[in-house]
Length: 436
Image 1: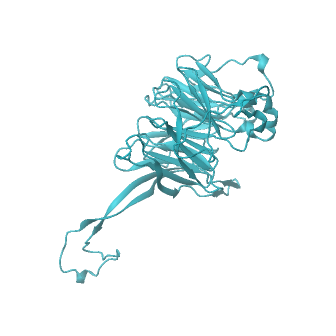
Image 2: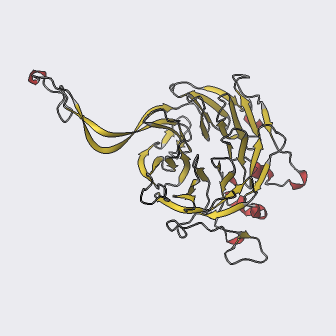
Image 3: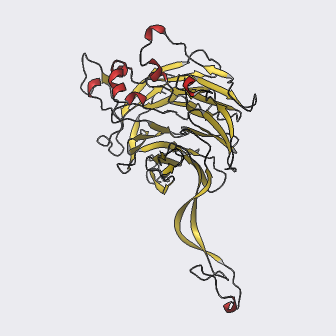
């Protein structure tokens, strides 16, 4: 089939101070949640398809907005805890309400999102304003009735999971058993029950006895989509560890170690920095792992530990600019990655508001741009190309003119359809496959 063409569908602009820090579709793709640096969560809902335009698909509009986290201060450590949302994860829907987990550096919260379009009237013991009546004035009983009202979306906090992480939380992942989830920080991974807030079980602890012996940290973690006993976590050394909770309560000893042997001829001062894995995702099938480091995206087969199955160069033209990227701290940017619904195409972000797609079957790739200038309704995105010296085509962009302040770190792909969400600083772009 090859790579699909994407057309612009929707743009949402947050306030300048509230840079989007995470993007996540729910399991049906009907809802899309974003978290930002200001601790706010914005939920978008897909509108029903228009019957008068059979080829059009529903757009996403703002469904609900709420403040998830507030800035805090740890007085024991004299440490400010910012409100920025690090991750959002939806729980599988069990009834009419939706539930999601959101986390900042320290505290995870469970939120319930529900709709109300009826209100009860005709209470016996309360008046219309909710005040308790004088019982001596109640002379007859009536049956309360539900009357229609304007649709109201209510968001309420159901659980607060706090005080379990010494270091910054970088990942949360809901287990396929729908009862537990894990949270990971730099050195530990904790397992929680969704109904219990006052305790969690530490299942991975890589903290050395002497912190001077610390050589690596945990960068991301995720549960297997189908097997509730399997989880994977990545490290700053570029390794992946698959753990099986059936083997031991403490998963410090991994079941499998996925590591690519380093070529000594390619070693440099930046080797360890650029090999750090910033994101890891299981494929929908559960057979493969997708990882992202600074320059590449890699697909690993769970049955092959010694090397990745596929390696995709995201922006290899930056290899000659690592020194300046180190000086401006861009080399520490953490790019995320995503699978499409059929696990045939992968997506990840880059600089200059570019994002990259790689077709695993045809080995074709494309660079696309998320920009407000080129985002006209239904406009098809044009492929972009970065050149390094030599002959330039008309629309080529020189590697020296790339804007490193414009970066796409967070992306999400609809679970079943070709609809993608791209967070570019404080703008959220939604694109879908080309209209017929």
